[in-house]
Length: 250
Ligand SMILES: NC(=O)c1ccc[n+]([C@@H]2O[C@H](COP(=O)([O-])OP(=O)(O)OC[C@H]3O[C@@H](n4cnc5c(N)ncnc54)[C@H](O)[C@@H]3O)[C@@H](O)[C@H]2O)c1
Image (cartoon, rainbow, N blue to C red):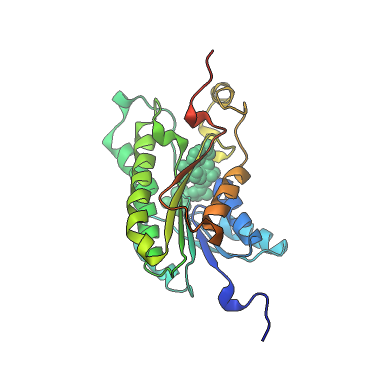
């Protein structure tokens, strides 16, 4: 019997933090790639509305409320899914610049709680249900290389990259790959904490002279999530115009 796309051939993807910004662009791109996408966010109303908008465009996107820090909620949601072929750990928080001497343990704990522990919970519950050929994609940040005024954010993203590398070794025997995308400055609500002057100054330091569009990150995720990326494992792809390589001389 001939059938170009059977139900069993449809790959299922989950994206966290998909109500807006980079996560929303990733959810849309994966759906355009032909995956059945579950867009999740702790902001339930917004992610539901965005999924409805995307369905209006003919895309296969459902939505669900999900706080990545809540393991019981993650477990209950994943138990309703037929399979999880792709999980994109995108949900994350940043904060305004804070000198290291003023950083307190509570801020560090809450940053690690979402960016590291949340990613850990979602990835662990997902890979337990993931078939051969599965894909884990983690959104890290160029910032993990280091940066002033954000030790808690830097530490959370560096830890995430470490986890990606360790996971990639353990999971490759099951045919599952684990990779990270490290964005530079991207035009999302995450930049809302900056004053216009600070934002302009930061943008001038970007190779393109401006924050990138969320779609540039979605394109990189699209590759790692695809069947074409089977030989890429444990990698970090910087999508930052090359700033991570170095800055030109003055
Ligand atoms: N915007 C940038 O310049 C930039 C640069 C590098 C990396 N990143 C990373 O990209 C990812 C997406 O960021 P963005 O710029 O789109 O930010 P954003 O603030 O626009 O979106 C983040 C989304 O995550 C959701 N979220 C936060 N905590 C959550 C939780 N506990 N459970 C579920 N959802 C939660 C928020 O509701 C929001 O919808 C983050 O991991 C961020 O660290 C962003």
